[in-house]
Length: 411
Image (cartoon, rainbow, N blue to C red; front, side, top):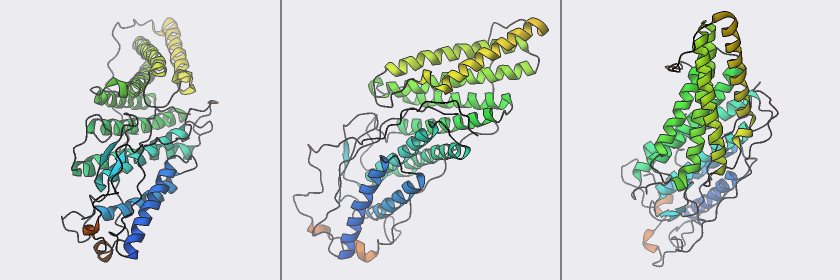
């Protein structure tokens, strides 16, 4: 079963040459700087390379981050910060606020900004793979794993590195807690979508599917509430997505809960549960239209035309008709006025982020290499700072529109 996920744009960044003429006084120091420049350029290229896979991404990120750690970590394991931490100015745009960049002369800012983009890449890789027509079981596992990896990276940045920034994070920017938390929760919810699709395919107990769908709807609702205080100009489209997925999975939960009630000979309650499912599906359908009409950052799609959406509509209709037929022939039960309260708790299939750590310091960083950087020789007209009018060009991302879905299931 294919999936459709909303994606915000990648962060863009100004080029960094890592040229410290006069400061890097030995060939070893100059080589580290050259390796930093090349590995950064390569990593940025991979973000928009549609042929890039997780192994290629991990190799590129490990190399760049292991080199960048030499600007941050103390070589003698002391608490003293590295003398190179503030040597270079870095400029990054935001996923929501267009091409308006933030700049900080701090290697930790580069570490968390590039790390953020790596996490975004994993979500985009998962989205491209999940939208394929003939997604295999192994590919579904890759989608699931990639989303958990992304959640782990976001969580690690929030807990271990963003607090180390000298300049406080501006409100509404990517590195602010509200946005990071929403990205983490969205990754968990989307990974659970893959679990639900697999459970349906394998015809698992309807009670388990209902509970997973309910937990997933709650994840999406929580992510939306986290963004509620942000400017709708930037977050409006993203929130429409989170809203429609909340309603969509509430519809799923009530639909499968209705099947559970029917199996327990509670046909009247089952009908009421399916009617509630219909209501949530109608809300999701309306939100799909609003999503398509809302301007703002993110992918453009018509989710209501996607097979994952249409299939649920047919399932609700057919299940409700079955319940009504059986009530008319067998049960003759009264349909309650109030919808059943969903107090469902999934014991299996809930998603947790995969723990993430940045790689160890690159072996090229030795005490001798670090000592070869002579900061007293920095020019007064510091060319490491970007010019105020330096443009940060957006990354040209591969087309990730959902492909036509033939109805193939995860096999």
